[in-house]
Image 1 (cartoon, one colour):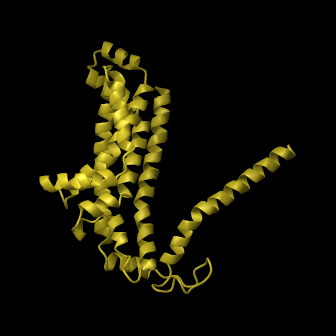
Image 2: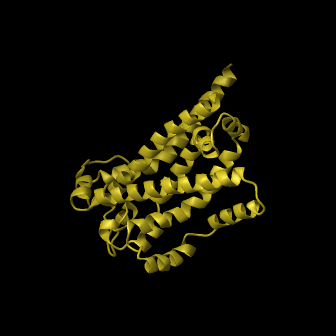
Image 3: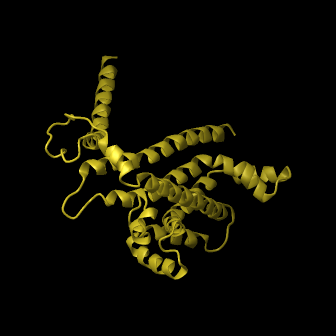
Length: 274
């Protein structure tokens, strides 16, 4: 009994220390963001000696941060949803329809994930230039789909493989078409996996800097990642303002994750009941 209690205390202490290590960078960002502009390097200690919210006020009054956040939300949500729709359709087809060369198709899809983004950004730039998609939100969405869709296909195929095809067969015996069986039977059971794909796509698109910097020139169309990089100057950097922007930049991802986390849990429970 004493040995079990001691092990539990050590485990709890280890988790607490690990949590402090993980959260300390976030705390340090908050300390710098709450420090008056120009004083973050002169103030010592891990506790702020003077707290001010002027950096957050400057962030929204002197910089178009709300517009940048809105652009990021639009691009991330659109690219995630379209990648999910495309990936789920392709993954379902590869899971249910057997044809010669399906394994090769999967290998080629996976191989695209091994290519760094820097190797495709130049061809995309030339392609978008010829089609008039440079410096447009549509081009940004298409560029991010090229990053997310291959893994979405792979992940969705694995989720559909875990769902017995006999369930669709039973639904078709009851009068459902193949599309209706997919929509009403298979898709609800795959919701936990699809939610994970959406989160992956949203986070990938949200944190992208290379495509946003290369494909977008107009400041009004910048995403938040590009906007935050503009705080870094040639001779000096507004660290306090940059840390305030980084904290604001992280909030939408946290909110989306918390919302989709509930969806994952409810979808998993619903799938287990069915």
